Image (cartoon, rainbow, N blue to C red; front, side, top):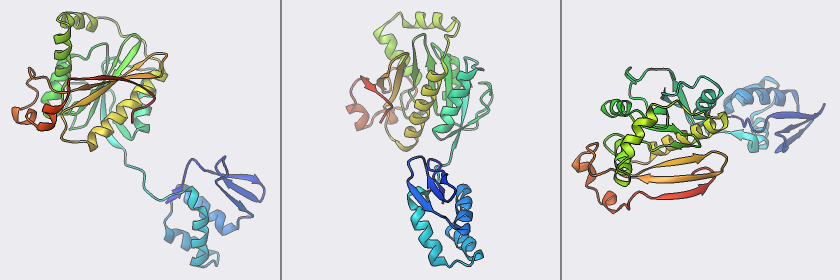
Length: 285
C-alpha cells in the first residue's frame, strides 16, 4: 500500500499535518513513529513494514493498525495496473512537443512506448502498434502490420481534425482496408484523392491535440484488450477548436479478404447495422 499521490502530506503549521489540499485527513501533533510511517508509505509499505517501524519506537501492533485505519481515506492498497508495452510507428516524424505529448498521453493511459523511432521494416515482436500518419496511412505499412498479425490503431492527422482508430485486430475486426473500401463504395473517386493526399506535406499538430489523440488511442487499445469476439470496432474524430467528437463504428467489408469466412459468419456480426456515426462531447465512455 502507499499514500495516494493526489493527497500528499502537507504541514498546515509546525505541529498539524494534512493530506491533500482538500485536507482529506488531518493529524494534530503526529508522533515521530507516525512521521516515519508516513515517510515509508510515500514510497510504499506493507502492514508488516508499518508494524515493524512502530515496534522500533516501542509502539504495539494495535496502535499501528489504528493509525493505518485513520489514514485509510488517503491510502491506495490496490496495485496500479501494470503498464503494457506498445510500439509507435511515426510516419510524420514528430520530433517536437507534439510527439512528446502524444507519447506521454499513452504513458498516462497505461502504456509504455518501446522504441518510438523503430522503422516499419523491423519485426515488432507482437506488440500493439500506434501508427501516426498525415492524412492517410500508407497502405504498404497496413499490409505489413496485417501480415505480421499485429494489433494496430491509426492516429491520422488532417488539417482541422485528428481521427483515432479503429483498433484493428487482424482476423477478428474490420481492418483499414475495410474502412477504405467502404469509403470507396460511397465515393468512387476516393482512391485517387487518397493517393494525392499521401504526397502532400504533413499538417501541423498542436501539442494539446496530440495529447488528446494519445489519450484516446490509449483508451481504445485498453478497451480492445478486454472486449473480445466482436468484429465491430470504432474510430473517433477530434475536431480542432471543438469539444465535439464524432464516433464511427466499422465492421468487416464483404469484399475484403482480411477475415476468414468462419470468422465473418457469426450471428452477432450479421445482426450489426451498417457503420454508424454519432457526435459526443467529452471523452469516450
